[in-house]
Image (tube, rainbow, N blue to C red; front, top):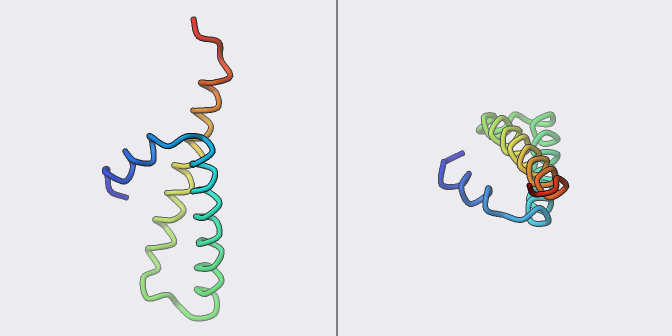
Length: 72
């Protein structure tokens, strides 16, 4: 994932991150299902998608913890 893409993802709200996460998981399911039937032309796409999902989950966790903690 390009650093420009990461920066745009980091600026999203929690609700927008959840939408992105749901879309990424749906795409991952479709790709993995297709990959089991016939090999994908670019199997590295699965790895990139897994990493994007991990980044989204991390950012969602960080943002929810920031809002849950009282500001000192």
